[in-house]
Length: 233
Length: 229
Image (tube, rainbow over all chains, first blue to last red; front, top):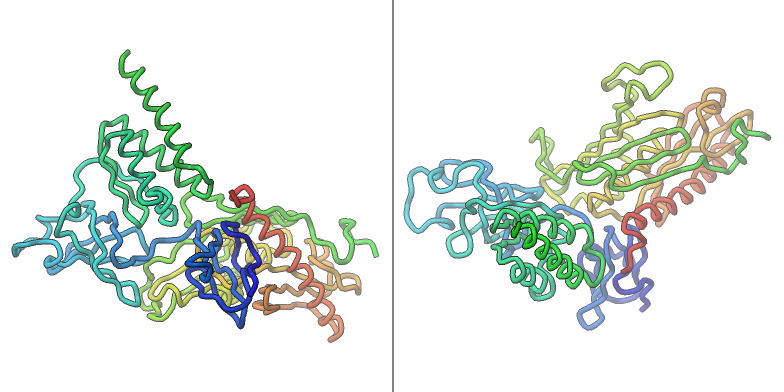
């Protein structure tokens, strides 16, 4: 039983992480008694120090049951919608998971190109996902701005128990919906939207740096001050 | 023996690697290997087109190798030819054992290697760059896949032939491998060598691969400013 890298150390594919008997999670392969990283990411050793895993820094979103995602209606079929959820796989949304009443023409509810906020209802082994939009806050996204970040950086944008996103909402008074798939919907005053886009992109870029929440807060405060000054003129 | 560019028999050309250079690709890398200049980009996993190639238990890995018309001294006629189709195929074969394709059923991973300037050993530079681009795209891999060639020039086995040596030499033997398990994923040869010389060339090319492997690791880590913060 031996750990060969430190907690939160950056590892590349093929790095020997540990030898011995451990549980292993995402981003790790076991060969014999050795555990190797399969992705570029940060090494974590948790769950009462029995689980080795690597949290990737890059990679496409894979749908997971219970996730909230922002998607674009890709095609309207006679009995369902196909939704692009910014993943390797197309998800589907059935009327029974979207509507309370029967509707003849589905495109009157969500048409091609509409953006929706949805919950991933179920996913099977080959990543065919079904979505759910029947209750709040799920449904069509009207207006606002959408910004794309890497889905692997979404946990950083949300922060521990939502600390980061709560702080951004508090500071800017804008509506923000974060999809686990890396699409973020922002609605507020125009200059505020632009500011949030910049902040979200900064978090995407600097996700692997610690103390980011405080840095973001500072940045937001000074930028909002600047906006107020220019607003007065 | 003096080599044409003054290198020792087991010395690589100077190599420079950069990760994440193309904005629109899911993953990308740029490699300068002597006078070779190579871009690799990765798209996917994404929907399989054409649909009939899809496998419902794993992803399909497709590689395209292309030489730009200005990459060589005489203009190369643009478009795929016999040679580039072959190199695309062997590149896919060299990378596939490392990529965890079974993680992405019913999808396709596309690798495009673009040779901007060629100076012998482009397939090795291409595979080296493609590996970095795959990692940059976040695609899980068992190990990095470095590649390097050895060959026979003036009756002597040497590492990493340059253009002049390749033209005047007797043999060229490119290898790609997964250094962690010592698994060779690509081995080609043209020219003539005795059995002992082949053994020697393989061993020499593997030492080259290991050096390239360390450079690949350093290039990946340096994208995140040394990481660990």
